[in-house]
Amino acid sequence: MFTGLIEEIGTVLNIKSSGEGKIFDISADKVLEGTKRGDSISINGACETVTEISGKSFSVFASKVTLDVTTLGSFISGQKVNLERALTLSTRLGGHIVQGHVDVTGKIKNIKSDSSGIEVTVSVTADYMKYIVAKGSVAVDGISLTVVGAAGNDFTLYLIPETIAHTIITTWKAGSEVNIETDILARYVEQILKYGKSNSDKNRETDINLMNKLLENGFV
Image (cartoon, rainbow, N blue to C red; front, side, top):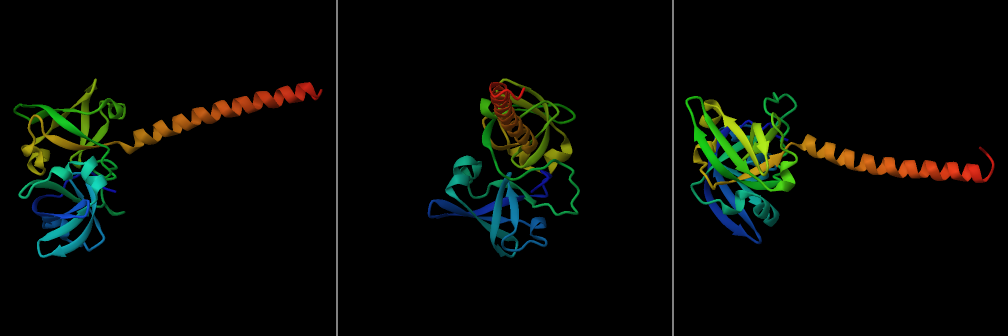
C-alpha cells in the first residue's frame, strides 16, 4: 500500500530484457533508506519488488503483464520517475489509499498554467471514468491527486507548486501517457452493490417460492 505522496524523483539508469519482462535499474536516495530486497517501491504508480540494491540504485523486474498495462513498457534510459516506498503502520496517510495496481493508462489532453499552478486534463476510457468523480481521489503516475471535475472521458486536476516541484509533472505534455489508478473504495462499492442486488433478488425469489409452498400445503 502507498499514500500517493511522492518521496523523490529517480532516474532510469539501465533497461535489460529478461524473458518476456524487463529489468530496470533506477537511481535513488531517500527511498533506499531502510529498504531491502523484497520490499515494494512504487515507480510512477506501479508497485514493484526490489530485487537488488547497489549503492545509490535499485533494480526491479517488471513482468509482461505490468509492461502491457502500465507505461513501464515505454520507459527509456535517463527518464525521470516518481518513487515512493510502501507505507508503514506509523505513516501519515496524507494522500489516499493507493495500491500500486495500475488500472489503465490515460493521456494528458491539455495543460494550462496560471500564477498559482497548472490545470491538467486527462483522458481515460469510459470503463474507468465511472470511478472518477469531482472532489474524489485518483493516482496519476503514482501521485495522489484530487479530481476538480469530470465529464465524458476526461477529468481535470489542479496542481499546486509544491506538488509540481517534487514530482515528474514538469515532464508531462499534451499527448503524454500516464498511469491511472482509480480509488479502490469506488470499485469495492460497485462490487458490493452488484452482488448485493443479485443476492437480494435471489432471496426474494426464494421467499416467494417458500410462501407458495406453504399456501399449497395449507400451512397459511
